[in-house]
Amino acid sequence: MAGVRKGGWESNEEVVRLTDRYVMKTYGRFPIAPVRGEGCRLWDADGREYLDFVAGLAVCNLGHCPPRVVRAIREQAGTLLHVSNLYHIPWQSALAQKIVENSFGDRVFFCNSGAEANEAAIKLVRRYEHEIRKGDRFEILTMENSFHGRTLTTVAATGQEKIKKGFDPLAPGFRHVPFSDPDRLLAAIGDETCAILVEPIQGEGGIICPADDYLPFLRSVCDDRELLLVFDEVQVGIGRTGTLFAHESFGVVPDIMTLAKGLGGGVAIGAAVASERVAAAFVPGSHASTFGGNPLATAAGLAALETILEEGVLENCRKVGGHLREGLERLALRHPGLVREVRGRGLLLAMDLTVAGGPIVESCMHQGLLINCTANTVLRFLPPLIVTTAEVDEMLKTLERALAATSEEGGNGS
Ligand SMILES: Cc1ncc(COP(=O)(O)O)c(C=O)c1O
Image (tube, helix red, strand yellow):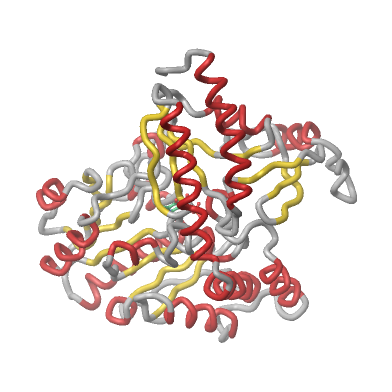
């Protein structure tokens, strides 16, 4: 499959050279350049095939180039690419309707990424406090080990020092508390606190699930203290955990929810979803985004959401997710010195190791399997939600080989 691009990019090496010369060095990249994708498979510029259990970091929930989304994009590209939010955009309205009809929410603001969705949520929280509640509280509690994005304000909201380093001064008004610790949260609420922002399951932090009663506890605290509850579902939403939104399985609803990643079926889009009461704080001129809710992204999002809701994707996620989890647990039993824990929900699964995960990710990549490592020791498995049990079995065999090789090298303690 070499020479996939009609006009060049003949090899991974050529692309790596271009990146190294011209692109800012914000990413530690593996030396491969995927140039084509279909379903759960990717092909690099050397023509090498990979089974993809990264899925663009939870973006390609329907796999690569899902036919219904591709059709919608092709049609939209020939109809109308962009028009300003000075006018009504039918695909945007229809996608908002679809989200509202399938969630707690009443209204949607569209933007282009997860960080922007959280920016919108943070602005909405503050405006609700000042303009509707007529108060002057401003502080938002977020969690230690959380991740909410890379804009300056979402970096301030993020509870990880390594993400903040070198960017002082950060926006004030955020305080971090330990995740899933009710007492520390209660102790942190002050006169200035107006909201809690939390990932239902921490993604970048290492697939950390809260105690079952933690999110319901947050809901009741927010109701008692008149705080807004914001769920960051950028990574865990859009079917990833087996329900359309992760919070559904915890039996609570937020006041605001943020979405991105899987929402566009592979196309950049973000959204903040809110109840009518809270959404009323935004009036014409309060917030905006030139590209937010553009025809192309929302046509793709509509096709993606319809596919998820109509084509058994959530059922597949639950079924194959169970199969993957069982397989990972079997591997954990076979490598007790190497695996600390298997955790997660649906197809957001993790294997926490006693050693650094990087070499295992590389070993898998050399064998034609893409997996990810987060929080240094946590192997993260985020396949497309359309993955089959046969593909899971294929990936488990490769992972087993990589774990066995690490065990032989005496990798039991980093
Ligand atoms: C929970 C969460 N929130 C926000 C973001 C930021 O999203 P984006 O990179 O689209 O700005 C991410 C990205 O990984 C995320 O996992």
